[in-house]
Length: 67
View 1 (cartoon, helix red, strand yellow):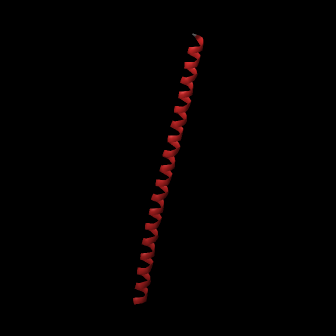
View 2: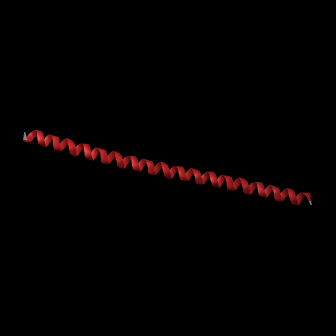
């Protein structure tokens, strides 16, 4: 009886630690994915700003060439 209780407690402890570890891993993975999403978004915005600056520069050149 004592041995079965010890095994049961060991099993519960293992299950608890496994679930906590997997939750932490999931949270860590989600956080890493969120950081990557933010990086991608910042790169996209930077590219859009660069494209807009190029367009403005081209427009300025066209306006100055016309006059």
